[in-house]
Image (cartoon, rainbow, N blue to C red; front, side):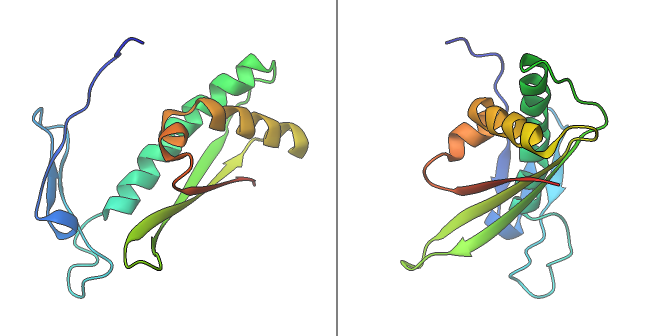
Length: 137
């Protein structure tokens, strides 16, 4: 294996704090939907994760489509990330990935999505511990 790059971020104050990167590209004050008064102060960790996962998966989707000989244009990927409290008082995530692949038949679109899910690094990281549903829009 070969490391292509490493991203670094530093958080202070947990879910209601801040996230910054040493290079200054990210400097975010977080909001927390579970905490009255600061729910709209900024994005929450799940929102940031949804954006990152949708972008990563969208890249994998394009690669999978090309590999399968069905290149796609004007596609979109929408990620819904839910924070769920489990029965032991801990938390987990549940994810839905919705892809819109104009001009691609539903069965082929689902096949492309399944193939992308096999190669996307975020999908691989979540495998086993998190429910990820793939849905064609």
